[in-house]
Image (tube, rainbow, N blue to C red; front, side):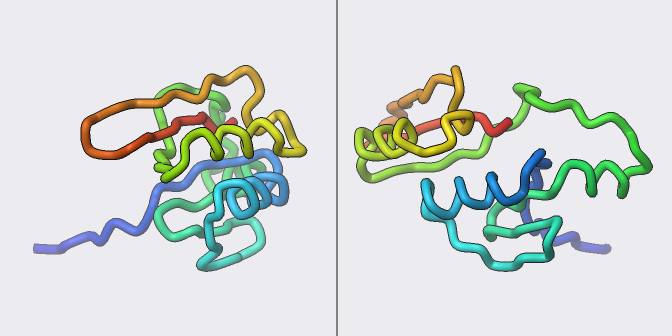
Length: 115
């Protein structure tokens, strides 16, 4: 029997620099590997949409689908939301709502969909 090892989720982004800046500077994620068109943060990677589309033989990539979520937790939800609001690139949040879920396990969780 062959066992496959899960490595990470990958999302495509229109602007790799802008997206990397957001995950590093706003959400404090650490880059584990930078391959130019693909940047890995460990549990997830971002990949330049135009490059990825070429890899999949120019098949259509649907942006802004609502069938995927990157899940982050914060010790200080109020401060995290303020940082998101003050981020220089307001398109990072746009009209999306930040949602707090109380699951009984953690003090506060936020969700914000990537474009």
